[in-house]
Length: 297
Image (cartoon, rainbow, N blue to C red; front, top):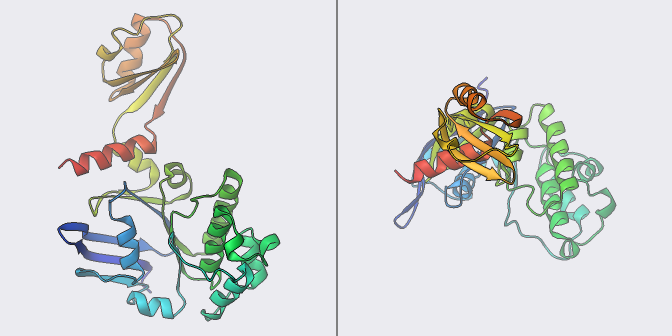
């Protein structure tokens, strides 16, 4: 049996002169959790719309579990949580969950859906009376109700506070532990770093990086060397071996370097310091490097 949940091949979508998606190739294995990253205008939302069959590509193909999107959706294999999903204002959360359950062949029990989404105490609240965070959790409940094999989430933690985000990702962890597949887009890079098995970075409608979070971080190159000045001078730090940039944060200096060993050895031989730390480049720095470089060419 093919273990591919999602396959995009040569996918292109134009809007006038703009190529929102430009020859996109992407495969996602069953049971994986994949984060889709990219700056505004990178093509993330368009790619998700094409994947779900909400829009048609100008060229290329989409298959979900070996089927066209419409067939996979009708078979109950796909659930989606979209930013612009609309509601019947007078309906309650419970009514919407029950509606979603009726659309799928193997629905999850209503009480379990509500519990997973953190909405048990609000089940009978009308949708037009919800806060932004509650409305987002209601969208999550709707997407979960049919126990789909693939869950597609577009900016799922928008409007959620810290506690709600933690509860959301705990629910996703339980969901994927059963072998389900999750594809989510996000602007919260730390979420991709912490919760995704794989990160796909888009820029100008194309994949510019694809791999585990740790691998994506290394693509930006270099490491950071940080320390307290201990009263020492800042002058000359940019001349140390390997140093590409120098940032001063109060009394703390952060050096980005291509050769951390050489930088530290030279630093130790020329000045005093305290609290030395050497770390990998953060995912945010790698993201900025990858997307900026890609859009400049």
